[in-house]
Image (cartoon, rainbow, N blue to C red; front, side, top):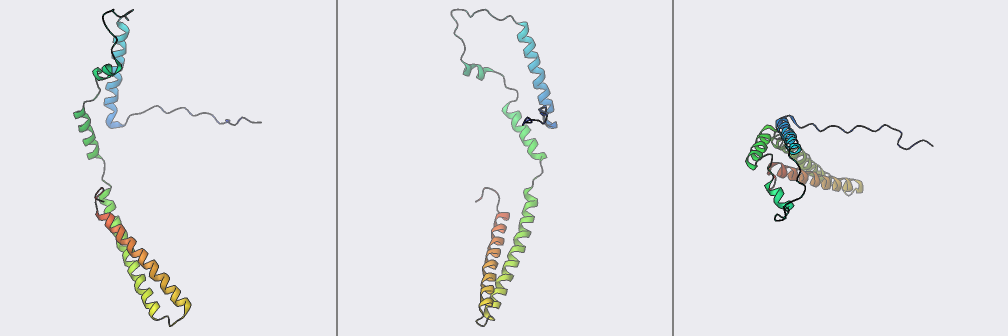
Length: 158
């Protein structure tokens, strides 16, 4: 029987940083190489002196230099946010247009259903059709109102 994994394995793609972060990644890579060279040049101590206790990992993590400060990170995020297009402005217009169309069609269906109900003259098929039009018109009209409300309200305003 043939092997279940007959297809060739794909090579994992090498991580490529985004263009706006390429300089930071290159600087981080250079620092890493320099640190490795500096640690290779220093002789490793055989054992620690008796008076010193080994440092706790939490202290080492707190003392380790970070690549980017909080202010630099905030500035980079603000710049990135300014470069990204805002989709909300276009979606608001599309939402309002869809809401208006749905509300107009829903109100038209309500009017048509009411007219059919008045002219049904006791015919069962006409009454059922009119009630279906009234129900669907109500649903479509209320959906239009709901979409319009969501299109005009900002995110997080409830």
